Image 1 (cartoon, rainbow, N blue to C red):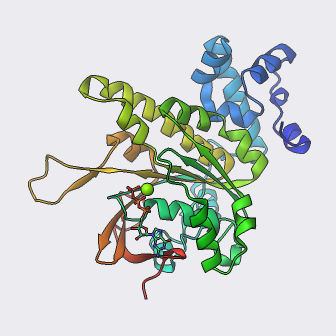
Image 2 (image 1 turned 45 degrees about the horizontal axis):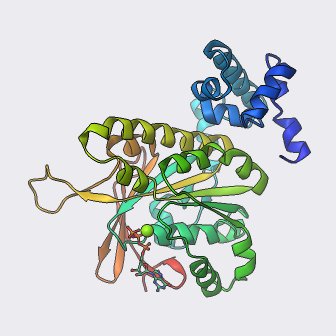
Length: 325
Ligand code: GTP
Ligand code: MG
């Protein structure tokens, strides 16, 4: 259950169309607050509760209106100047490296989904681990004094690594470990269930970052061959959209890691493409490509709506993601 003051602020019955019977039905289906309704959306709400689609649409739209009114989510119509003001104030989390942060305009952005792709060993998982620590630090050190939710699909989350990153930064490891919630996803359906149920967990814990390492591995392993491609993309698409709505509704940063595959359509030699086709590309707000450069690593920002396509050098040390030299 959510804390009382949060619950009353987001209570389902703030929407007058939600009477006691509907409220009970929604709660039984796992929807605890108005935020849950808009994260899942009308199609899911109708499917899970068995209510009419029309009713579900009305309820979800009203839920959005109430949250807009409360200033919890962005209004549908806003002036560019108020958007600009809000963008200047958007919270960011330090990656652990100054130049990496600069590349991103100050760190990994909240209310957005950032995709990071690259070959094995390029630092995707290390970035996830580092953010679990930096997000907890005070603002003047690049954090948000928030917690982290780590969804591990590859079995590569290592508490020992959190300990070493914290210790190397002069921090008390136990405190930091205690503020990271780890969910191990055993298959794609389980991974979907975890994000569908993540809302109340974020609310209760005060998480400001969600790491999904990796977004695609289960889909890639389970859906083999061309015949299953469209189902895979559909499922991945729905999954990514839930992440986008979680980011926006709960003001969290979402980091998804992605694998790469050799691109057969390249005529210019070395070329790699992230897995997941257009789905991940189109749903992520920012995309980062990591690659090796001797002992160091290069991070390049690609397809950003407002960053120039630029790259920087960073390195992987005991501190996690770090500056070179
Ligand atoms: P895949 O998941 O296999 O695709 O790779 P990835 O991009 O997630 O790689 P990951 O982030 O796990 O990076 C692994 C690299 O991080 C290693 O090759 C090391 O260079 C570095 N690394 C990992 N742990 C440590 C550590 O404790 N100390 C130091 N100095 N470097 C580490
Ligand atoms: Mg990894």
